[in-house]
Every structure is written in C-alpha cells, then in structure tokens.
Image (cartoon, rainbow, N blue to C red; front, top):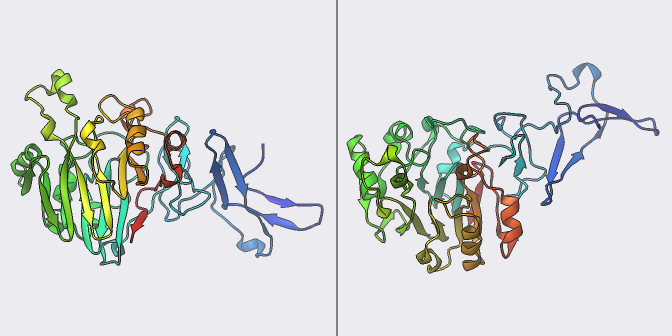
Length: 354
C-alpha cells in the first residue's frame, strides 16, 4: 500500500513532500488512479504542515471551499473544468456522488453577460439569465432523509429569487421550509395548479398554470411541459385524492442566451421527444419506474444529440438502495451519442451559456 501522507527521499538525495495535495482519476471502467503531487522540501521544518488527518488506504482530499461530502472522507476532483466525470466519485456505499461542493456566493446573483446554470443538489437548479435569477425545486433545508453533502447555499444567504418554480409536490422538490425562509427575497412563484393551491394554503402566493401555459420571468420565457409522475396513486398512504398527471410538470425556458429544459421527474413521454432541441437539458436519469429510466434517458439524449446534458437527481441522498436517488454518470456517458456533451457539475458550480 502506498502512503498518501508522507515524505520521500529518493536516491538523488532530495526530500519531497506531498501531504494534502493528491488527486483522483476515475476511469469509465470503474478503476481509480491516484495522482500523487510532490514538491521539493524547502519549507521551515518547524512551520511544516500540521493538522492534516490521515485516511489510510484512501485518497486524502479537501474541497476547494472547505465543504465536502458526508458519510466518509472529503474528496477533490483531479480536474475542475465542468468536464464530464471529473466531479464524481464512487463512495463506500456504491453511490456516485459529487467530489465536493462549491458554495454559492452573493456574486452569483449579480447581473452578468450571459446565462449561468447551477445544480443546487438533488433535483434542483438555479439559473441567472443576465441578472434574472430563477430557482427550480430548491430544497435548501428541512429534507427528511440524510444527505451525502450539504446544499451549496443556505436559505439565509439567498440574495434574490425573481422566479421560484416548482415542478411537483414531492418533498425533495417542494420545500415549505425553504420557501418560507426565502420569502422575503422572492418576487413570484410559479407551478402547477395543484401545487399552487397547496402554496396558498401555506400563505405563499403561488401562481398556478396548466400544462402548456407560458409566462415570463424577466427576459426568460417559461413553458410548462408535461410529466408523468403520479406515483401516489399506487400507494394507499397517499390515496386521499386522485393524483393527476397535470399536477406534475417540467419547465422549458427560453433565455437570451439559449434554451434550457428541465423535464422534471417523469416517465418518458412521446411528447417530450418532439420539442425544439434545447441547448441544455437538466437531466434526471434515475433508473426508476416512476422516473425516466436509464433506457428512456438514453432515448431522450439521442433525440437531442447536440444538447448539453447536466445530470441531476443523483448522488445527493444517503440512500444507496433507492433507485430514485441514484444514477452513475459514467454509465450514462458510455451509452449516449456525443458523450463529450455530458457536463457533470458539482453542486454550486456554474455552466455558462453565451
């Protein structure tokens, strides 16, 4: 076993140090490779590196901003360019999880020249379209299952939400605590008719829409797309009402810099294969019977062969046995056309359209 924290003296007589600066490369075949960065020992011995815990047999990493994944050691990607797979690692439970989290700073809410897309963790996203900020399904607190990492921003640090969009009622998408704690900085709420009704029952001024309706949030034109996710009808616990397909939706957004589509949680629908090709798809590829399924995700990706794919709804919940919350981007990359367009972001990282 090679030590990950150590000093080395080679035959040339020079001493080299490496603690705290290693990288992990994950190949598509599942193999892991350690890139062991070293430097010549030229620092004061008494002022050497202190306080670095050792993790025997694992790559030692720390996230760039001090945050990291839960339930194990912290990890750092070997590279950080928004490139596919470089931001994912398989944890000890067999879940493909983000290597780290990028905290979202207040500057992310500023007026910008372009449109930025961020994965907020889980099935949520944040879009800044030239200064207009939209959040879709943010769950920044109060979720009732353990997470593999903390979300990239706390409710109290949210500067502004011009449009708060919700795809459906499930509590990994619709968070009353998050809505209440960001209410003071939120201008408007848009969702389906049923979810808007629930919002209003909780003193939230939700605006309900039918599937196919369009509305504007600043310069962004938003259309509700259909979804098929009414799984509650199969559960006695939730059969206090009839759950209709129109209670669930996706959002197709036309920004000044390109088209972004979040299909939402949904089985694959034929209509979803008929749209103008978006520039970016926020893709839930959970291999679950009430989600798109792996084969459905591949079919969707083939239908829109040039769209940038940002995988979401994976690796955020500490539930390795739930297909709902798990998917491996490496497997998806092997199965799709033009695999280089798969951009695996860490939570909080920005992908920019210009």
